[in-house]
Length: 179
Image: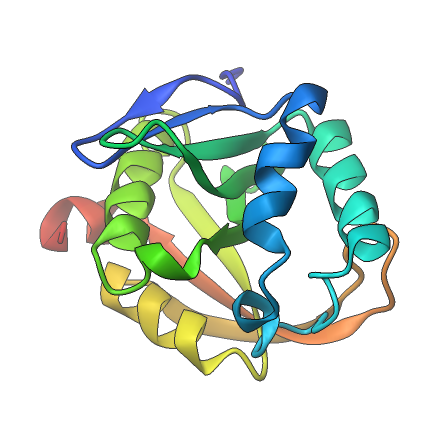
């Protein structure tokens, strides 16, 4: 089943809008904070030359979003849909990061709920790659209802492979326990 990997999605806190090449400066302003990447497998993504590679991969993915705070109109992060597998009826959500000012304010849960509601119109499973050392994101994705199902080496665009945990939530579980 074909579906749009870059729709405009909206919730009470923010708008997810397709990422465009002209968004680099606004997104890098957020990503340039080293605190965001402390637990991430690529801890130096705050450096402009490293982030440029990440951004290039985001644009090429044709599934990336900028996250816009509805109250301020500012770009506060990014996320994306990727690795859609029609045979497995599955797609990944990942590459997500937020401005530190958004942490603990419900942005992640709100964004994930919006993305999952959309995806479960088209697929039966959604997966997430979470860095093995990224405890913050492991806790956050567990709060959404995803379960760890595997461990694998993941080579992010232009980066060396790093150990990631694979989490999954299926449509039936989502409908039953929707946070």
